[in-house]
Length: 612
Ligand code: M6R
Image 1: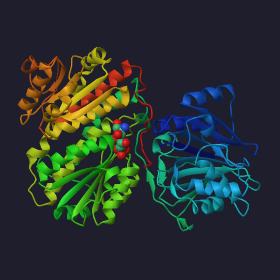
Image 2: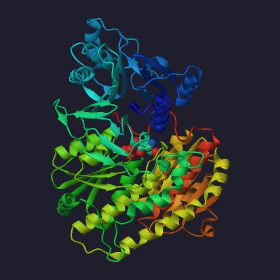
Image 3: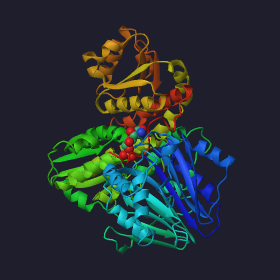
Image 4: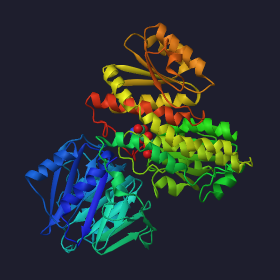
């Protein structure tokens, strides 16, 4: 959703470039508009622009702003169209409080009515304006901190916001921020403090961070950071040192983050299993997993909860856990789970799969499972995120920062983490570790290297098929979720309509779509269903459809049924999806680029969906 960033400091850093630099790293969270506010000479000065951050930068080039401290925002519109009028920072009607906000205030209409009756006026369509007016209405009795604390007592909904004021008596540098739901991270420097929706915006300046808890209010001045809990009392929150490498968050010479992240999969996948398996004994070693182990030992069912690409990882996870550990698994969308009545008791273990650990639907589903007695596991990429704090045990994916909105390395590392989890479930239920089950992991990095060598071939295929209006992706068994993921990648970044389907189901409907213009990407690997998928390709071929086969066999084997053959290395059947998805990521990437789409920031999307 939206991205927020803030800075106070006595270092005399130029504040606007710092805020813009932070926003660049947060733009994946939304790019409907951007804005900054700085304080100079005891006055608030703001600049806002519709559309991408570049428009704001151009505006600032023409009319520069300067100040000593300030806030920045990049917007993913929820209330009101994505026009400059609704761009943040949003001011109160007296022009003395500026607010940047990520989230949704559910009772904003009621509050707006009450504030309007008291003489406060509104000039935007946003719910944020209610926050600004509310804070301003409470300023006169005390400082900004007290006003924010009083204001949040009246807010219903989800928010991470930061406020500044130049009201009389507030001559010192001060930012007050509050969190209820979406992430908010404070960065501590020497004589300077930062805040952001994502550590990626801070790591160039400091690695020492605090993740605010729900209900927290923080006050930042150049020399101090104070955090107050929901009861208004000062609290001490754990300071963490991030070990991320700042260059990891840059494009590193690639044209797009997405391509860079596709290439980083070799390392990311290796980092995710390294040190967690004993190749000699077959044991899986996970830190702080005792509570979960005890729950897994007697679990009757495992629920995998996630959204989007992470949900596809969950579908693969079901195969892994059922096959390796023999426990029944249900996979649910976070957004559906909480609105049905899932059968959950203390013998259920619920696993939330989330790159960001901040997806509102996944978090709500986890909370719903926890309320009914389930123990929670998070499979997550972001340390300290909400999912990891809710969970009784965490399996981190070591993908590093993923900036491209379309998930790639987060997905393949989730598959590795789920493989480890499946083996750990098996172990927790008393089965003897089997070295032969962990050893195939060692072959993954090299297999990924090999598959990345197909880049030029996929670029060529993308040129050939970039004008197709629809694509069909077929897979069976553990590769059916890979067909879904291939279709999602293409939809997201090229805006071509694509459907993923279980290959065997094609004859029950989608076969009607097939003609000479429809490319059908079919995944035919492994032994179990290879011949079946080959027959499905034959059915497409007989109806003049275009068959693009992803296979681990010799190309000759599919010569008669496929127009294009993408040959991938062969691995253990349960790890094969990790390799199979890579050509589909590359195909989607190159088609998106060829069609001139903005592959790192596709329209209407945001990286972390922190609203329902
Ligand atoms: O951070 P999460 O893994 O919880 O995000 C879930 C989805 O929003 C995410 O996977 C989304 O589908 C991506 N755009 C996929 O590329």
